[in-house]
Amino acid sequence: MPRCLCSKFLFSAMFLFTFYTLARVGEVTVPPLSYHTLQLSDITFQSSQNSSSPRLVVTFRSFKHNNDARVASISIVPQPGSMHCPVATLQQYLMVRGNKADCLFLLRNGLPVSCDHFSRALRLCLLTAGLDTTSFTTHSFRIGAATFAALNGLSDPQIRALGRSSSDAFKKYILL
Image (cartoon, rainbow, N blue to C red; front, side, top):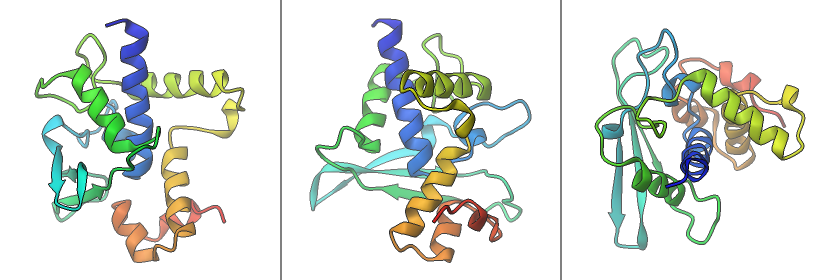
């Protein structure tokens, strides 16, 4: 498969996944000093009697400020017909990625995506779209998702739980 198509599947999946899970960059990439990177085994698809598309369940076994070693899970419902469905996009990426037990997001050469690589890909996409690259960072996914959740009526405790936050620091993200 051509390199550009592999990158398209990878970064489309990463961007949507990061937004819909309120993920920190260290949960989807391999940062220099973190042990919170999601693994392929942290992802499951669960069938539903009410839908032909499975929902995505993400299990966060390790995350920032998790002092009591609790596990957090997020369930993402598919959006059939949407070109921005995080479930379908992740499924497309996983077909290209294969079943190698490792970090969830891997480059074509089999290496995990670094924070730097993710940041460069985001910047390139922003430039291609003609957007101001100084207005967005990898943290913008988390900020946008918290804002989206608040605009859609989720309560502070619900947003805190979705973002795996131990404090009300997420409130500074919400741009209303």
